[in-house]
Length: 103
Image (cartoon, rainbow, N blue to C red):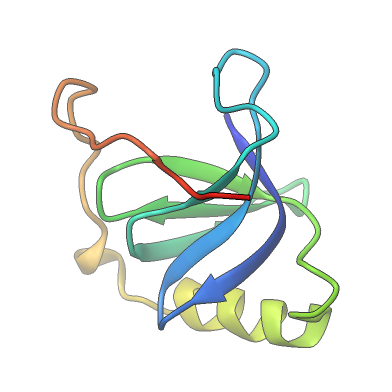
């Protein structure tokens, strides 16, 4: 599963950070996700974000300027979304691509 490192929340529910996915040509590039609809914390403690497009990402360390406390508040809030609002996984053909940010 792709990982987003040095992340922060843009707007109310989009994640911006550095993509860590050795199989992607965007590895090491800054990305912005579609809106996060749900978070879950795995048994190993990893935070997994599910986006509106159906993509899932492990969230690594938040950006220093965003802060660990704000990151944890976002995770807890998104974990509280009722499971009835979880979107089913989409076909890879229907998923939108990641937006590449300059910089």
